[in-house]
Length: 315
Image 1: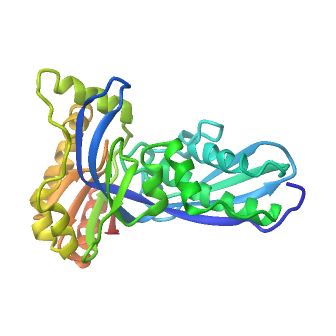
Image 2: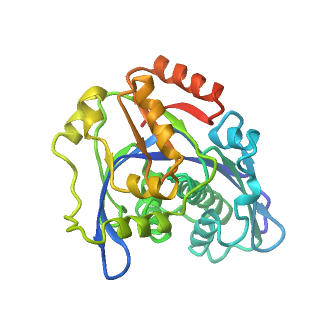
Image 3: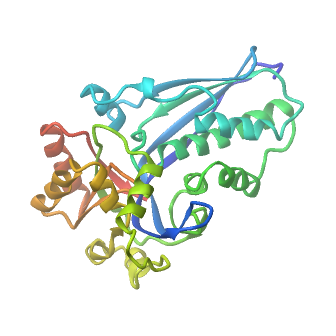
């Protein structure tokens, strides 16, 4: 890039899996899944700016009041844990876009504003990648004078980056099948109110899947599918009807690797929430409550007990 135009900024949401079923391991090591993704009202923001150097550099900051900021305040997390080299999914996303604009030259700086816990089962890295795709696409198109990549092209790049990146790009609520990247949007009748509780340390998604396979070694695992009534309960916006249908095949594996999650789940039951579950591969726990005020009250109580907690809406 020879010019130094204004930066471009884009955001992408974190997510919870309201339902997650995983089939047996496939020959390629992946698992077919049936997942109900739901975006939440906390997410990642990426600002893309051209530089006079070469390559892509990364800066990271925590969003004040976010789960990440709370983890830092409690000394259970440091931003040094976020990679700033080519292993960062946002860097890979940026470079995938730049490859479509070969006439550009110069470097790029990505400033990531983190709100979603790292390795927390909420798709934070995927949200970074999705936001980078959007921001770098706008910047590259403006600087080069070429047309920006369309939605289909961005979704194709997203699918090549990871199973959760396409959903982070589209947001809302969607059923994910295959490895999770085949998405079918679903309607939501009314916002859901959740309290998210971050853990002291993250969990590796591959490790959780490996533990799931170990726990199910002698089981006949059926093909994954959504339970009857799940989408209808979401469409009508009846949280009380949705609650008993929420489930996560990865939860037992997450609890096996991080047994300290059990009292976090139990705290939800003690508070009378509609449902408590581990999001994705964990270790973030989500409590479903009936109203926004109840979510704020529960988050205040949990923070008072020393837990990083945040009330959010979904989607």
